[in-house]
Every structure is written in structure tokens, then in C-alpha cells.
Length: 315
Image (tube, rainbow, N blue to C red; front, side, top):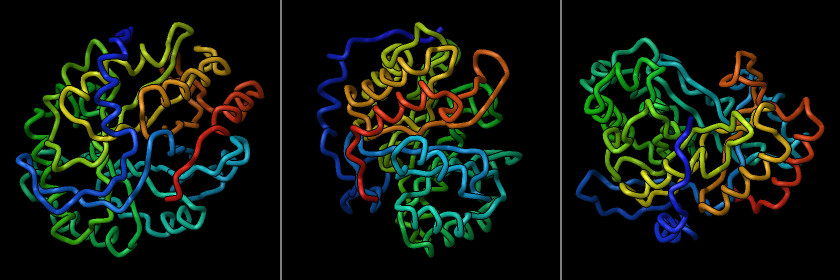
């Protein structure tokens, strides 16, 4: 179902450009927008993140994942609906555990055109002020997987031009509020026959810090190259921004123990910053499997082995 490998050689040169990246940009604006300012530093294969059921209301599931995985994640994620406030208390707890909060902020029940037109600016300023006042790095994605068809802010529902305008408006407003502690994560779904070209959704290098790619291993034939390879080539055609596997997992149907090793090996081979594991149980066919490692001793052991070799960034 997914696109197959476009040769690694096609991306080696671009990946090398970020092989020792430090995420801190200078003050000079580029032709596509104002410069990105962020205080979060990371290099290839230095980030290990997790999404769990429970956050931002409780941290305990993350602590349990850390115990099982044998490593303390340095990215801890949650999903925020439109109109919700920034979860400062949770972000503080995450920081106390030596990690950075990564949140996917989605325009649920909010017309994207109205966001771009400034109709939600009071809410955006309040959110930006909370993030700024928190005073530590935060990774924020807006409207994740917009290149896919299943969300109301995505392909077939919102024109790419409108989405780009909303993205730029949000980033500009945050900067005007002094919220320069945000790492802006432009998050796309891995290439599928229905997703189309990602370049049409690209808001410009001046408005993005990292590129996130969401992708999963569903069946035994899935590999890093088949799940992520073509998407990485498409990204490298438009930008050399650092890449994060921003939502990923290996399902039981794909053969977790073997393919977890393949996922981590591909993460290194392609020079990505790391991955955020979707450690949540879903039980609705091939595309909604039980992604957890906690209920499989073999998957747990494979994940521990793979994660033990990472040199995690101190964030």
C-alpha cells in the first residue's frame, strides 16, 4: 500500500547537511518568512518520545513506559483540541523528568480560514503567553497530517493555501508575543496513494523548525524504506530542516520484535532526530492495532535493546 524505497543515495547528501544539527537559528530573515528562533538542541538519533493515554491529565503512563523501555523519554506528547489552554502544569512535570513537551494542536471545530483571518487571535495570544511564560522549550505542531484526507483541516477539506496562511499567522503571532521557546513541528503523514504532493502544504522554511513524519508498520512486508523512504525524499526536495518521526509504532501484525529493530536502524540510517512512539492500544483492524510494547515481552525486549543504544540529548 505504501510507496517503496527511492534509493538512499538520493537523500544521503541532504541528510548529511543536518548530521550534527543544533536547532538554533540566527536573526536574519529568509525570503520565505522571518527566521526561526528556538532554544531546543538535538542531533541525529538523540530524541526518544512517547504518546500515552492519560497525558496531559496524568503522567503515570509515561513513567510506566519509561520503566518498560529502559529509558526515560526526552519528548513527551499530548494532543490538544482547539479552545483548550496550554497545559503548563503537565509541561512542568515533563520538565521535572528531564523531557520536553511535544503537543499536536489541532483545529477541531474551528474553520481554518477563520484562524488565518485572525478571528481566534485572543485565544492564540493567551496560549502563546502561557507557552512564553513557561519559559522552557516546547515543541508544537498545528493541524498534523494535513496532507491526508481523514481530518477536517486536511486534504479535500481545506485548501493548502488556506492551511499555510493559518500556519504562518499562528507562528507570527507567537513570535510577536515573545514565545520564542517554541520549536515548530510541521507534521505530515507518510506518503500514501491518497496523500498527494506534500510541497503544496509547505508554509516556508522561515515558519518551520522541524519536519515531522507520521508513519506506522502495519504488515510483515513493511520496512523503514517502504514506510518513510519516499516521504523523506519528497521532504528533502523542499527543505533540509531536521526530521523527526513524530508519531510511529510497529503493530503486532507487522511483527513487532523484528521490525522495532528495523525502525530504529532506519531512524539512524536516514539521519532523523529520533522518534515518538505511539504507545496506545487500538483494536480496529490493520490500521488501528495495539501499538503498545508493555503487553508483549518480545516487543519490550526488542525496544529495550534498540533504545539502549541511543545517545539521548539533554533537553
